[in-house]
Length: 256
Image (cartoon, rainbow, N blue to C red; front, side):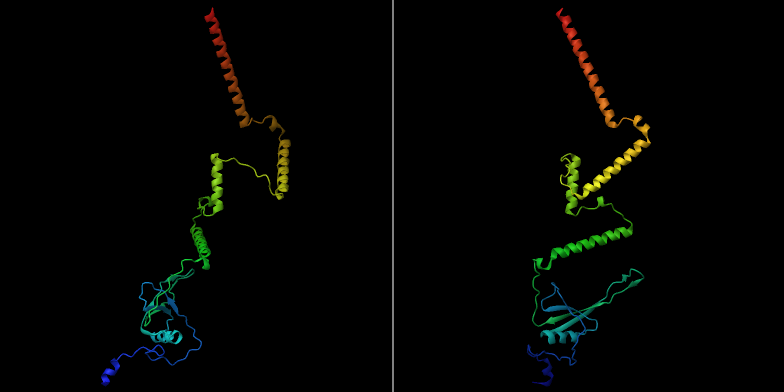
């Protein structure tokens, strides 16, 4: 074989030995973190990783081979800069950029389908905590902006508030009647008795200090209403008696 052709002959892949020269530096306590990122739109023979900024293409190639015996034939790398962020106090700053690498695999790798049943990971609890945190953040933002809301104007998200609103609506519409609970907690009996004695003492004190008020007290609305009803009934009765007497007199004249 001519010497010029030796570099063009492709060697067969050996799973025990890589087709490239490995680095000789030994690292016993690595202090870097590499993240395998799922990309559903990328072909299965390409894998994406987030690596430290100091990582090179040779580092990711040796890393995959030494730890996982994964043979790679090509590496692509790029750095994504982060957008500027404003500090709570002070000016703006730009976070550290992120470095990504895509390696071409000899053996394709297909990600498994995500699990449909998320109960073992407490998905509902996590979602509820996330929603509560978002609602708290929105309410705090409204308060800081000066937009104060009454509790009655807020959306009724809790079940007890919805039931209470339905019961109040039924009472206002006359669909239900208010019934006092029969068995109250005994601890309220003492409080209710003290409040009743205070009201009676206050009323007696007011009556003794103002004796003329009782004699000159104006009739209440209920008394006025009862008086008007009595006058109306009396006038109606008088009119009916007068009409009956006139009718009787007319009948007597007809008989004559």
